Image (cartoon, rainbow over all chains, first blue to last red; front, side, top):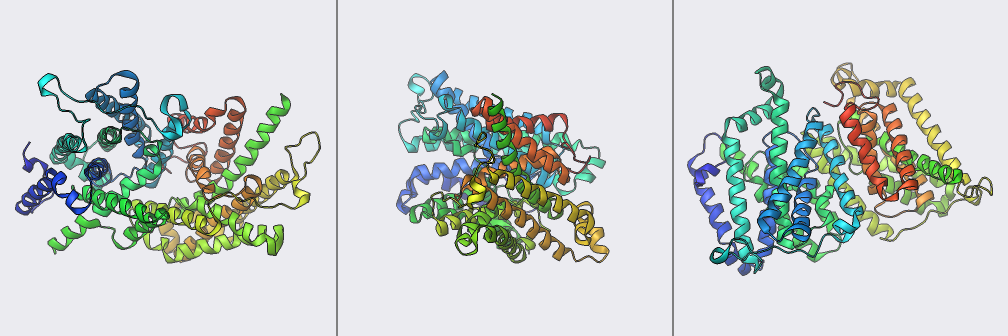
Length: 327
Length: 289
């Protein structure tokens, strides 16, 4: 994996991008060393990576295909529950739990995508919200199996590898962070490659002008469906990581509020930029951590942030920077 | 057994009427302005809480009349000051905005009226059962259904017969042409948003008398209302009406037979409609794309 492969598919600026990329990865790799000095803790950085991955996966759909899903928490939560249920009831194996969770969320998204791929705009969003809540109610009411309102407990991540090659990610936050960073890097590389491929370019073409893309003979519905499916698989993968991070699967990971958080992270960071959602996740997780430790009325603060971002900062961090640099 | 079924059919009808009023308001706003109003449930709760605050001075009947109008005025203010700015942008922004607004309104309700449930007192005449045999059919329930039926009929007559109603219906189909013909679309959308909030407020006062008030009141009604709209067919108000009743009935009957599945059945209906009749019961082809 080379850093060049991870460059966002943006025309023009090649050189500064590579410097930025090196800086991003250097910062991410050294988190356990510098974050405690700033008063943070490594688990918080892990949360940023998990949410960042989910938001980047959502952005594949939202920013690069131009399709609005407001129900991605469903696939995130299905990933989390898939991993948790596997560890609790089936096998004590972290890799199998990850595979099971990712498949559960990804396949659910792929099948549901078939039903709604003809919808556009707010109607697409509305169907994704409604369908997402189905899983929330299911996890909520299927008490005996999922732990209901209290969430799924009594499982924990297991060491990976065999014999001398064992890497005990269960031992500490830092080890798990590096495991997570490796998964994150691989996923981001895959998404970057996908967006640079002809398929990725076609998605952007559909975003820019769907009718013209269709006139050119592109099966737009199939592309949107595939984009939705890929996005759901990566979101589910992020969900499995969330369950492993906390050793807990929370029904709130399935709630549409979390879908809203993913969307707002993407918008804060910059919808049409590759790295934007990660920047948005950094801002959002830090704000949420800070505000919820300061006041019980954190909902108003988060709500006000949503409204302010929409009214005054619609391009997001990276979108604004890119615009400044272009002009 | 007959009583049990009657009991649940009554419940279904009552819950269905809340869904109908709420979903009709959502649907009006969605059709004309292309905005999913996530805060609609909070306007509903606001209507109920305003009635709670006003009823000691105005009495129940006064509160029933005034609080929906106040809710509508607050809705108009919100639309004028904020939501109007985002009509012409990507739908993601209006969704995020109303989503944030819902959070703020819910927290405000908790701050002003407290986190604990409060009841809305009813006049004695309404709290009594119609007959002693059927304790669950109170005059209030009869009254509620009558009010909702009158409101819905009034709304449809208004949309069919009045000039503004005609413009709203025309704007649903083709807003650009309506604007070209000299209609002030900005005012039309503001009025329409207020109308939607009026229905939410009324539904909130009615719901408060039946199930009491809490800051999350609107949340539980929001998802079923979304589903009622999709099931009924986006773009069709008659469809929304049918969808709301269907979902209320289905949920109530399932509660009688197998309580744990009462939420699931709503989603089963949603899936069935998306699979078998994607445009919804009364939706027109192409309305949802």
